[in-house]
Length: 117
Length: 110
Image 1 (cartoon, each protein chain N blue to C red):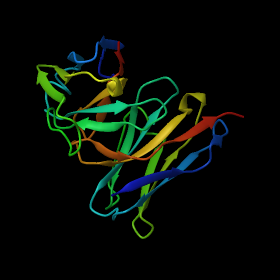
Image 2 (cartoon, each protein chain N blue to C red):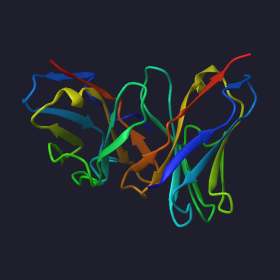
Image 3 (cartoon, each protein chain N blue to C red):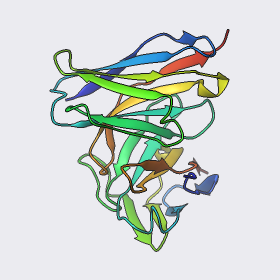
Image 4 (cartoon, each protein chain N blue to C red):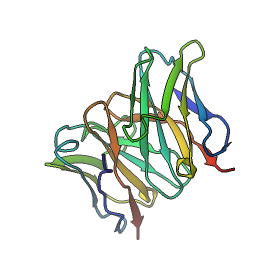
């Protein structure tokens, strides 16, 4: 079955850019939507945005000015960049397959990103 | 866009039924039958339990059911079991290709 794995730096300095990659295994990344979702410690989930394998994207309006997503079908990967980070961006970041408004499934295990100098 | 409102906690005894509410607005929950529900155990990734309001993915127990009335969606867990103790989140399509999650509910099995 399809599995997702997030990867990237666990520590990012304030004002810098957070970069994460999600690698999809057990199936093709093509012809699906893929989303990023984050969760600060002890808090709820926040949808960051989605990308289709054509490269079209939708972003959370509250983050839109700082978010860029991309996809590399040759590597079965998609990526997240979040610029100008602050401590408020410290969270566990999840990637998930997005069934186009029919839910997110499956999810990666999540990766903790801490924003600190 | 504000998060959907869920009760902070709900509890029940084994075998009982509990219902978790998820209140939005006419712009999200009220406009679309596109609410999904997620179960999250501590330290784990969320798991899809209900999609499109009331549909269960393959492998999810039929003890979990979803419904909607007006601007409020609900998740009912019947025959409550110890393994159901977890955090639960709703999520709704909110138009303009945007999704919004609920505030989350901690379910405790007494």
